Image (cartoon, rainbow, N blue to C red; front, side, top):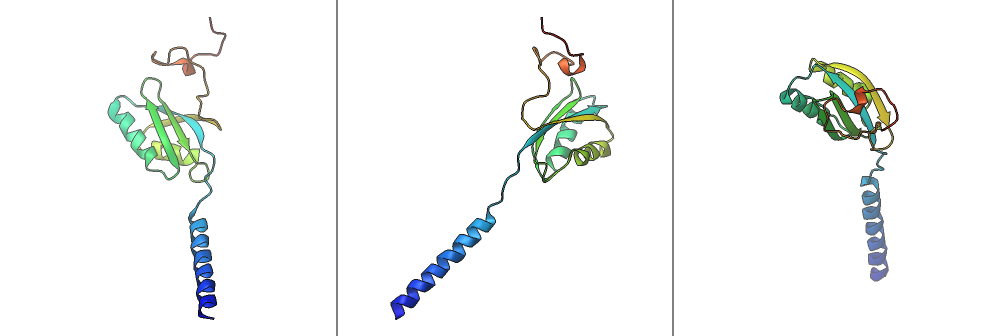
Length: 130
């Protein structure tokens, strides 16, 4: 009888541990990418402030801010943070926020032959490559 009770107790304990473990796992949403135009940045300190502000938001996974073209590329979980929330954070720093483009893939929304070139192709009109 004691062995049966101990066996039943062990099964109950294992079931509780399993439930706790399963409930601690969170379903992760798909990570999407948004490109946000940031106007008014003039130096690396500006870039650093924008990056730090975006990184502080829950759900932001990665941030790249480029001074050359004023573009903040943000990978984020849309279940945890929205583009308007990111734009509001940037605006609070005193920068003007332009349109944002969102994509469900981590790739950039534009094709660029020479991304190191000032201005990149995002500011150029689309056309065939030569």
